[in-house]
Image (cartoon, rainbow, N blue to C red; front, top):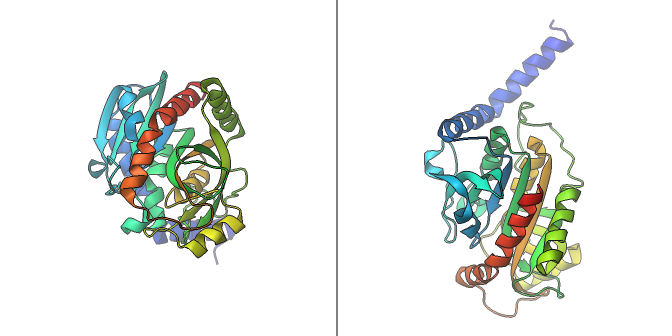
Length: 293
């Protein structure tokens, strides 16, 4: 009968097989990107939400790679998402910028949504800055505000870590307290004060989408303590913690404020328009944070 060490090795091998070769797929994508990179590997990863892609155009020494060229990388198919990874420098730091992201409502699993984050970690990223557009639930908010995400509520109905766990990618039961870096939160607040940027703070609730929330759902979310709601970010944050990325920062661009009730029709074009109106302030905030990373 095998001893404890051998039994553990057999269990680990079985879990890796059941996980479907996720580790190998991540390594294949990382190897492809390393072969295309010039200079230092990225230290900071940035995920840009709908209508917030302009930051990617400000990189120097930039090289853009369409998601469809990267092995196993899920494409972003929604308007406002360029669906490419840009490797370059920003504020003197080597960065990897995702112009657009995949979503669960496009048919991707939460694990597929989180796959790019694993690749960024494999490239060497030590800080991840995640952005999104979101509906405001806090009545003190205004359309166009930027909100620092201080915590998240996973209401997507799933988890990107569900299923067999490969210990090479992260622990079976990662802790989810203190998700966001106190240092980066402080840096963002300092940049906002210096640039006179209105910067809110709050809790982000992640829904699966693609339908917008009903009036009853909006009231529920507010009672649960959510200040903003959107259809992204939560799977990526969970995977980032699981993957061991040391510092995480999340920023929401508030495109509309519902205050707990649905008062008017809402469509994606209006969301994109509101995000683009706030983009200059968003870019200034992100550049300031990256300079302090």
